[in-house]
Length: 570
Image: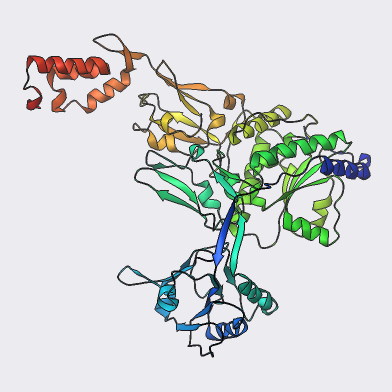
């Protein structure tokens, strides 16, 4: 289970040969023909900041083929001679600076000033007679808090003129190059049928909204339902949304999560077949890997690198897959300039992974984050042997079902505690408690559950629950009209997690007229209590609530035949 490694027995050359055999036999999956998003930029540039910084930047940009330069300064006016392109200058008052807002992306930035009457002034229309600016160069060094982006969209460039003297030329050159048409991959695909965000007007899971550093995901309120929408122009492929999504409703395309998972398992099998020992899976970005190679860094043979567009594209389900497939350890190689929300997301995923390993009887040190300069930890031999040498295969396409396969394998290889373990807030693990005295088996919870966790009893009035499929979205709790359901967060390290059980069941209530079972006794009693004072069900008409839908209609028509004016008396 957690056997220590005898270091003297490890042959690094054999591991290097095994790793090369893996690379030759199985390529890391990529999306060879991704759907693209196209930006159109004509070169209308908006410059923001103090007059000295804006003036110097504008001088460099003049005569470089841009369509126009619009300068919004925070202190004093700018006076520059006009060159080949129109030059527009405007000073923002202190009040205007607080009302300035910028939204959009390359080729489509809207700069607006909020007005006292609630309207907003479109500065592009007012200053250059266009709807939008194409590129924004922010020289304000945070003085102008014009947007909430943690990860700015394409076309929005920031430069501290005085403090970043070495970067000036590159940034200004980038401004001049952002003219024309530009394609980038559409990083994601969405299956709304799997989404646990909203149902029946209730909002449940918001995990993808919470972790996107580019603010590319929004909740759109329709007439009844809310839905998740991703702006492909703002999305920058961080991938944390796909790892955070518990149902697989959002899936990364470069490559798809399940293809990554299959490749990890196949790599480890091929490594063992080629004679490799104690493999360590390292998740690293393409950029970081290329930087290491450019610096001449060669890692030991037991390190197998899984290259990602960004570290958020693999979460704890992928890391645990590697351990369940025979990796000794999993290491996640951090890099500089990671958005704060991505760093927080990875810490949250690590906490989940460690909690699950502990619950299943494994050493939590098998999964760790590596800091940028942790060369010793990066190359070190693992301290524990692999949990298994048996291959792991997936027959299920669904993300949650695949994760359950991994957790079952880890439970078989470990010593599960049999108890419920606390998980970090927001983790998609837990059960529910159903108050049998309050539940009427109306099955509103079943119709709102986005996974197969909750099911009705078919021909018998019952409610069943499978904890392994529950993602703790809370939609069942919100949908229950009797407040009979409460969530029970935490990971249950016991076989009961994989077993469907009955939460509540009752005998069927039979129609007093024809004997057909059509509801439960508690449902009929609840409806009778709520409609006791309704004039339509006054007197003998109350017995209609104890009839099935067919007999109820027949009784109404019989009453009308006897007394045609009966309905007018209600």
